[in-house]
Amino acid sequence: MSISGDQLIQDILHPFVEAMDTEGLSLSYLTKKLKKELNANKIDTFKAKKIERDIESGTITETEEVIYSIPIADWKTRQVARKEALAYRGVIAVEKKELTGKDGAPLVPALEVRFVRAGNNNPTN
Figure 1 (cartoon, rainbow, N blue to C red):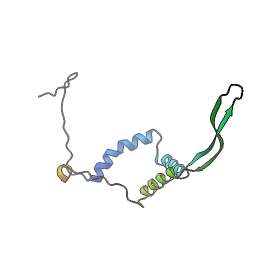
Figure 2: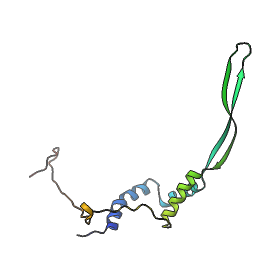
Figure 3: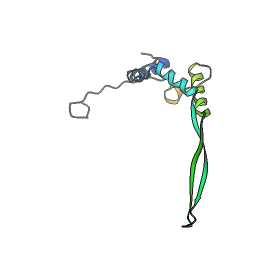
Figure 4: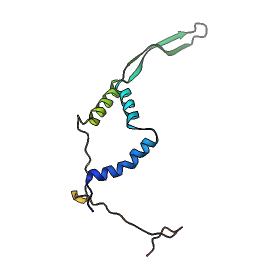
């Protein structure tokens, strides 16, 4: 029986995709999450050192306080999401994984069937 590489990959991925759908990670849900990542923001904070000096005890206390914060574009997250989106759409190439057999020969799936006795891991002869 001959099986194509594409069919083998689909057979391997099918249970994974079903499990994702069962857990609510549908294509629609993932698309919405990707869209959020394409517009990702992060909070940038500006801090200042505050130095207090107690004249009576002679102690000096240094603290750092946030004086200003603002949401700004999270370009790192947006860039990763943009590349993912373009790869999903086929606009840019993604790393391709080739499945081959030994020394680059065609992949030949093998199935081994073993019978075991209940409570025993040794195969029967």
